[in-house]
Each structure stands twice: as structure tokens, then as C-alpha cells.
Length: 132
Image 1 (cartoon, rainbow, N blue to C red):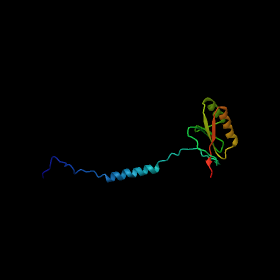
Image 2: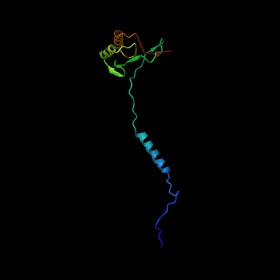
Image 3: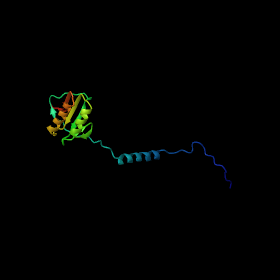
Image 4: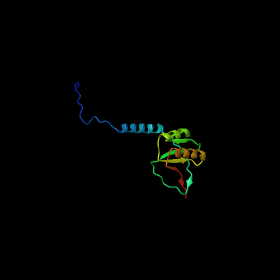
């Protein structure tokens, strides 16, 4: 018997079939999409009261939110009335926009209104939805 000492590999004969590779990558993608948890960004859920005389306001005003549990959110963080007053005294704002839930107490909204007036805010608005 005669054995060849050197084996020659011809170009083009050694091909990799990528179809199974694509199937595996696709299955991994589906697996990670189904098992990943989605991050839910929490927000402040309020129901605005309805008013017929609503007007559109520019977005450059500072917004203070009062929830139905009378929690005051100033710049996205829950604050007390005293903390809001301290920040308002330190930083001067020309216009404030109050978004109060329809179930919020009037006393909380009036307290914020008084703090804004004492701080020298010229324009104070209350958010409503347009009622038809």
C-alpha cells in the first residue's frame, strides 16, 4: 500500500454551513427577549379636573403635582410644604403650574398657591382637561 505523505486541501471544498448558526442565534435572541424583564418607569397618576375655559400653557413653566393622597411632587420628588417653600424662596420662578388631582384637598392646593405668592411668582396656573 502506498500512503500519501501530504494531504492537499483544495480551496472551495471546506465550506461552513451558516444555516444552523443562524438558527441558534435566532433561538438565543428569542430566549433573551422572552426572559428579560422590562423596566416600568413609575409616574404620578393623577386625574385632572375638567374645565370649559381651559387654555394651553407653554412648557417652560415649573410644574408642581399634588396627588389624590395630598403628596406634593416638586421637580419629580415628593416634598413637604415647608421644603417647597424653602426652595421657592431660594430660587425665583416667574410662572408656576399646579397639577392637582381632582380628589386632592383644596387646602393643599391653596397652601402651594400661598407659598408661590409669597415667593413673588407672577403667574400661577392650575392644570385642567378640556370638557366638551
